[in-house]
Length: 438
Image (cartoon, rainbow, N blue to C red):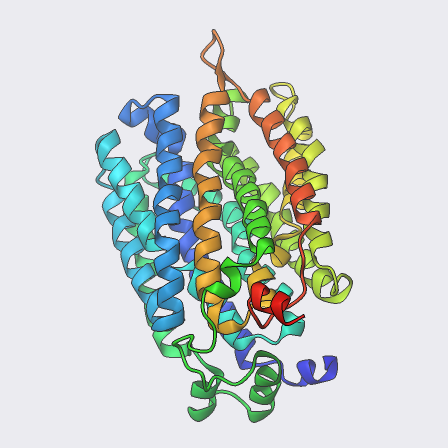
């Protein structure tokens, strides 16, 4: 099978790269707001708790959008669903440059979430349609690596752009809307929902088509998901274990992404440019960690890819605790802690995001991802919010984050424990029906 995959390396990987690029655009829009939070906080006269709410309300809206996104991905296809997503979040990003107060910002953050929430489920449904099972962990890790590379490049790019505008963050959001419109054009020109469509258009070689369908199955069942229903995953106990693991993963990931700029500015006293660089460097490591973890999940841990996630949680635990206790001004130790945390935390993403497509038939993957990610985003919602309440304001107006990082360390241990009980065996019947027939 490995030789066939090498020979058939082609169109599915080209489209996979385009999906990766579209998700980079997605992350640019959402992370730019987080990068500028300490400066937006000052301009709009916001409290620390209000900043926490601004960060968290996004994930509440994102969670609300997931179930609909999964349903649309299975019914009308990934391509149309992604198009809706990109149009909405690009327009909202443009309007963000005009925000004047807390309540306007809350509404825009919620609107951005409703748009961006339509992007994730169709991406994973596309991978279920196109990617052979021997590549699924790596493919999911590659697309998910946008969560690593985006925090590495976004702070540097947007802070430099803001510097060009004299430190003004507002014009940056006007510029960020443009890549979204380019992304829609790329999506409609090159991406197809099904391998058969690309084969008929002469874009996909027959050898690659045969390889894909020998693993994913032919698409004669269409987009309707008629063969299987949501009972497939809703009656599976391990689906709920998986969701708990996802909640914890996203609490840790978004908790760090949301607060890192404020942590570096208000705790360690960094200026705009220095903060942008220090906030970016750990995520360069995260990008490689995600791809390495996905590759190892396919090659070394193929029977039990959950081991990569267990390693990820256990390794990030001491790193978080270390970061919370680095003294102010000790930038080398701070960078060491951040790099180590990102190295481990992102190592298991390939397994986590490929789990629904490994365990359930592709006809229900969109809905399984929609439901699981809707629940998981509650972790993204409460993670930054809890951190906002755990931050301590010191007499000199600086902030103490030691309680936050201790909380994240404990969460990591819980995450490793939950994932260790996960069953990774593929099922083709509802668990209840399987038990009755046994």
